[in-house]
Image (tube, rainbow, N blue to C red):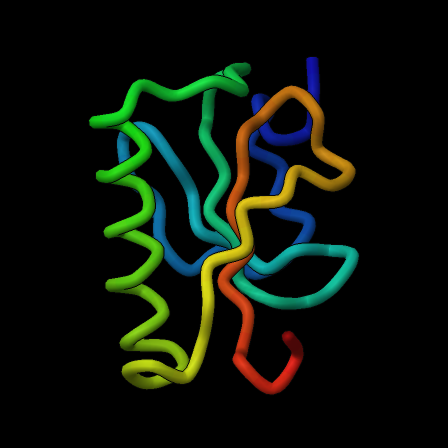
Length: 90
């Protein structure tokens, strides 16, 4: 079983919801939204909901228009994840 499925708290967790967690990435130390389930492909509706959640969190964490949502899948290849990065790190 993977660390996320075991709900191991390796880094700071910001928000826990039914389908996802927003936590600090242990590699780049920025917030990221991670699906709780092993899934890499979203429906259009799911993608819109998760992107809006990232934007809502980014507005609170960084300030409106001070971040971007990075959808590149890096080292976690079994849980879809989006990084919420400050604009100065683009």
